[in-house]
Length: 566
Ligand code: ARG
Image 1 (spheres, protein in one colour):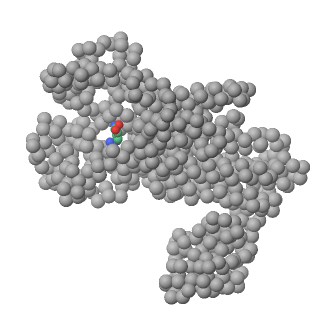
Image 2 (tube, rainbow, N blue to C red; image 1 turned 120 degrees about the vertical axis):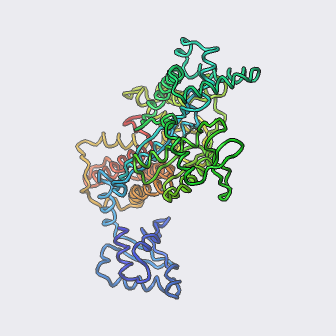
Image 3 (cartoon, rainbow, N blue to C red; image 1 turned 90 degrees about the horizontal axis):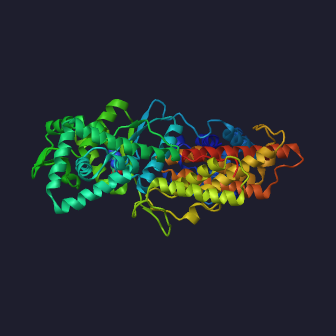
C-alpha cells in the first residue's frame, strides 16, 4: 500500500524522488489521521509555497487520478495529506503479506557475509552475567541479519591466551591437584588464580615464574600447552552447558590463541607502514592525532597483547570470510580498545575499516534487590541465573497449571525466555537489572507476557473445529478499529527488522512483540472468535493465526521459543 501511495504522490510531485517521498511518509499515531500521512514541509521549501496549499493541490490532482481507486479519502490537515485507504483493500493487502511464510524476510543481504564476534568468555574464568549480555545480543543480531539474507559467521573469540595462563600453571603446580580441578572445574581454577595473587604479594618472584611459563607456552612447550589445553577443555564444557540452556551455538570457537602465530605479521605490517614506535621499551602506534591513547602492540618483553591478537583476527577474518561488516559485541568499557584497533587497521591503508568494523557496546548488569544463589562470593554465574529462572517458573506452573504437557520443557522456554527478554527489551546501552518479580511477571512488558499471548492464540486456534488457516477471508469482517489496529501492528514487522538491523538494536523487535501482544489482547477483548457465522469466525481466526505466527517469528529473532501451552 505504501508503495502505491508513493507512486501516486510521485506522479503528481516533481520536486521529490520516490525514495525521498518514501522517507517522508509517516504512519499516523491515531486512526483518525488516516492510514498514511505525507507532510509537505519539505516541498514548501522547494516550491516556495505554503505547505497547506501544496497539500491541497496534491489532493486535488490525486482525486482526479484513476489510479487512486484504492483510496477512500484524502484529507488535508495543516501541512499534512492524510490518506484513508479503502478498508477492505487495506485489510486484504495486510493479511496477504502477513500470511507469507517469508513475512519479514528479505534478500538484501544475499551473497554478503557479516561476522559477529560475541560471547567470548575468558578461559579459566566463570561465564558470568556480563558475558550473558554479549551472548544474548550477539545471538539476536545473528538471527536478525540472517533473516535479511546475510550469511552470518558466529565467532566465539575466547580469551584463551595471555600471561594469566602462566600464573595459573604456576598456581596449579604449587597448590592444585588433578582430582579437585576435575571435580570443581572452573571454580577451582578461579580459586587457584586468586591464590596466586595472594601469594605473589608476599613472593614477587612468582611473577617471574609465571612469565617464564607463559614464554614456554609461546615457544610451544609441550608440558605448558598440555596443561593450558586441559584448562581450556574444562572451561569449554562449562560454557557449553550455558549455551545449551540458551539454545545457542557458534560457527567457530577461534580464541585469541588461534592468532598467536599471526601477530608477527601484524608487527611487520605496522613496521613497514612506518607506524611502530618505541615507548619505554614497548612498541606502540601513536594515536595522539586522533585524540586517543597509543595502541600498545608489544610489551617490553616482546610479547603480544590483546590488541595485537585483535588486529591479527581482523585481517584473518577479512581474508577468510570477506565480510562486509564485522561486529563486536562487548561491554562499553572496551570502547577505547576497539577505537584504537580499528584506527590502526585504517592507518595501515584499509579504508574499509571505517564502515565495516563496528563495536556494539552494551550497559551493565545490576542485581537490584535480587537474591541470587551464588557459588562463591559475589560472582554471579549466568548458568545460575538461568536455572533459577527456570525453577521459579516451574513453581508457578505447578501452582497454576500443573496439567500442561512437557512441564520441564515449557518451564525452560519461559524461564530462559524471561531472562532474554528482560535483557533485550531496553536499548542495549542501558543497564539491565534483574528483578525477579518484574522479569517473571506474566503481565507487563515481559517475555512471559508475550509468550502467554502466543499460547492464547494457539489455544484459540486449537479449539476451532475444522478451521484451516487461509488468507481468503471476508475482509469486511476485519475493518473494525481493533482488528485494523492489530493488523497494522503486525504489518510493521518487515520494517521493524530493518530498523533493528540498521541500529544493531534487538530492542526494536522486543518492543514490537509487546505492541503486537497488546494490540491482540485488545482485539480479543472486543471480538468473539468462535461465533456461528462462518465468515466472521474464519476471518477472525485468520487474524489470530497471523498474530500467532508473527509473535513466534519475532521472538525467534530474540532467541526465544514459544510454548504452545502455558
Ligand atoms: N574476552 C573478552 C572479554 O571477556 C571479550 C572479547 C571480545 N572480542 C574481541 N575480539 N576482542 O572481555
